Length: 372
Image (cartoon, rainbow, N blue to C red; front, side, top):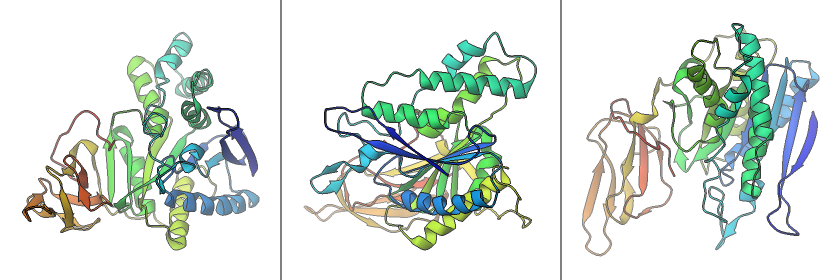
């Protein structure tokens, strides 16, 4: 294992934030996997899992089981880790400008297209190598104006040429679930089975350019741009939601790390694919556009009728909103059959607040499909 420390662009004299980057295996060797934890810095279960991965990957490296390279960033947002407001940790949004740390990653597809347009041929493997080099150059050429954008640049530069990218998050109160590209359904379901996910949510464009799509979507966009050339979807990327914020358990962290390692074995990143049959999935993948947000129409005290992980049917009561002034109760019901995979942590709702999310199959939303 090689430890690399990367300083981020400083916003002011006397301040400094650093990324820790751990590299296992042979630098530059393929296949390459990239894993990071807690880009939303207050989603701390991810950091327990990356800590477990450090121990397990070091042992696997010592045993000679790495076929290529694994890059691990144990805590991917030192800026967010340092943010406190009125005694509360604020790691999802940059307090400097209010931007979500997991939005606004660069779309490198056009820069890569401009670089390779005269070089692509009929050999898919050669095209993959050319595109990877072009994406690396495009990431290196980004010119960040502040520390948060430098963080986005450096994380993207570390991951953009990987075969597998896993971005570890969590929700507020949730069961294991994940997000990936629609075109990579089979691999997403394989990852979901390895982790025991209860929802696998797919989209071609979820909106806002989150980190995982900034790594995987350029390949899809380049396929469309160069429709007559053989171009593989050479990067599988997923956002893994490790249950809820309070699920900081050593037992769960070890189990999750083992599930990630099992997935990497089955993807050929680690040697000696397990002889045991692949884990059976707990769910089928569903469109993110069919995920139903249950939203508060008015203010009130939230009383849930359902817990995360429960199956629901259209018309089921999900929560009550109790008006403390009048005592009136507004009951919110879902429109979808599916699994309620996440719900909010606060029990006070303002109008428009998302209270719960249901992995359904029938609705069709458009625009930005992710939570703000």
